[in-house]
Amino acid sequence: CDSPHIKAISFVGSDAAGSHVHHRGSANGKRVQANLGAQNHAVVLEDADPQAVVSALTAAAFGAAGQRCMAISRVVLVGRAAACLPELVRKASALKLGAGLEPGSEVPPLNSKQAKERVERLIASGVRDGAVCDLDGRNAVVEGYPNGNWVGPTIISNVKPEMELYKEEVFGPVLQATRASFPVPARVQR
Image (cartoon, rainbow, N blue to C red; front, side):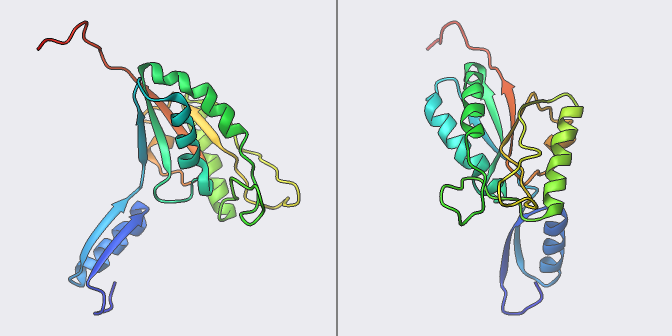
């Protein structure tokens, strides 16, 4: 942020780090673009192809163990789209946890013990606050890696905006599902 060779900064990350980067960059006359507390949503409408939805959400939520800034951490299922949830749970539960360099590995470990503890704490807070854990990836075990930072794919439904789980960036293989409905008019007037 301090180098005169840097003219602009683009940052994606946590609120604390982003605030620091924005403050330092701005104080040095830099243009700063900061996307803080990334919470990426997918909205699934009733007419979506269920198979395509399940495949896309599985890859977007659990690839790289959810540790990428563009991971989908929330899905809003509109009306009948909620019927995708059981198939999403089935597909996510079949993903193979493993070291990133191992053939067939689909969900790697989290990057640190602290990250694992944080993800597990946020999952527990959601359940404590009334969310439903449809697929629980806590206590995952991967043969040959007894000390790995494993959290398997986790799907939590009935998540509400006032929950800590909803307010915090999880940055792990956790997909929060909420439901929405919109009134459908009996007929469209022209």
